[in-house]
Amino acid sequence: MNKIKSFFTIFLFIAECSNSYSAECSKKRMGIDIGSGTTKIRLAQVDVCQKKIEKIIFEKSVPIAFKDDLSRSSKKQFSDKIVQEAISKLKEIEEEVSSEKPFAIYAVATSAFREATNARIAAKFISKKIGSPLKIIDQKKEGLLGFLAASSVTHYPENEIIVWDIGGGSQQITMLNKSKAKVFLGKVASGSFKNYIISKIQKKDLMTNLSPNPISLYHGALALNYLFSDAKKIPKVIKEALLNPHYKIIGIGGVHNNSIKEQLKLKENFYTFEGLEKSTKERMGLSDKEVGGDYADTDISNLLFVYGMMGTLGIKKVEMAKISMAEAVILHPEVVGLK
Image (cartoon, rainbow, N blue to C red; front, side, top):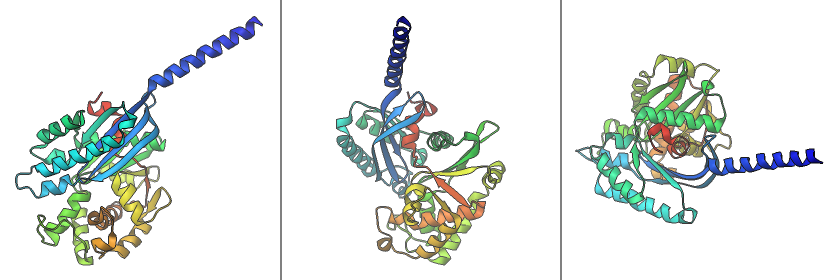
């Protein structure tokens, strides 16, 4: 009898310790990813000990065109209008999740904020309004954050994945090489590619033309030549790995998980080069009205962008992981110096 009591005493002690550990590890965190064209917000219950998202409580993506605003400035500065728009939309979201408080906020800004000459002033102003620091992160850390988060979500070993993140103003292709992160820091991405088509190929004024649609087949071919020149800068070790069947190529960010997925009408969590090629040819030449949605101005050029990169690099298949910097920063805030 004493042995039975002793067993239950030990069992209860372990259970209490386990509950205490879970409560200590489980935290409510909000991640804000202020990208070049889209701002993403995720509120989640996070196991901070295991670096895993337990539950997404709230998620939202809103178009805030920082990159386009910057491209219209001769001084490479954000306008007061775009900063106020960002604050207004973030305050609206704060109201939507007010019943979930308290929670910690982790906010990062990426490519457009790396370019703007008044980025620090804008970030400080936004920080004050949202009541949390807004960290402008460099491109290598952006790549590393995305890689770590994708590894957590997919459960693939880190040495078996290559993470491809396409943003509005930059793209990162990240892998481990001899246990160290190797990151391609691409300067051409969704928004910058769209703007190149408008200004350099179609010879239109970015001040008055926000969309390249409809894109002719001839202009599409010229845009692909522009992509080829950027793809040449990818390190040899990454190019070789992209052709190696040992690696799974994981696409993260809105271009893969929203734009491509919705246009290809995918039900699976992957797409192939053949399927992408078919949809790109079918949708070239569509107008904004025919495309529809909040991101009509970038959807067709996104297809062209991903099609061109996959064709140039010999990528046959991309698996998608629904990860943005918003999820990444709440899982790994220490990578960018947030506590």
